[in-house]
Image 1 (cartoon, helix red, strand yellow):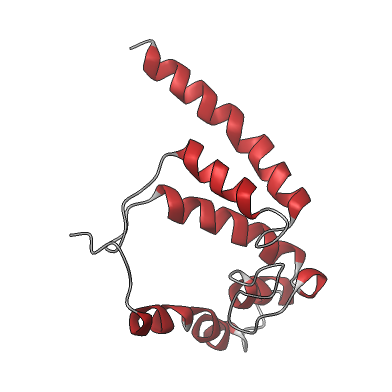
Image 2: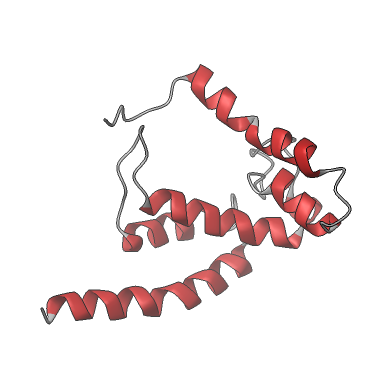
Length: 129
């Protein structure tokens, strides 16, 4: 069942996963600090409107920026209990729209450059069926 939108209360609960995840792994010696930062920061945005801390730009780790783009793309293309999936092409349009504000511009371009050929090839193969 798709409800189309999370309530404010549900969204606040979901937003806690970054801190809970970080707290769960922060004491582990077998994980790098970079890995721990990914868990904590992958929902931060370049403009500071992300969570959990609202940090901006270069204060967000490089790998968390990459993970944030990948995570957003996957979430957009996947059905959830609260939303329908969108096509990979529409997901790319969304990423482009948010590049430079939510997402690092250069990393977003790099991601799209890697993903777009796959999408085009897949769409072409579907047309040949």
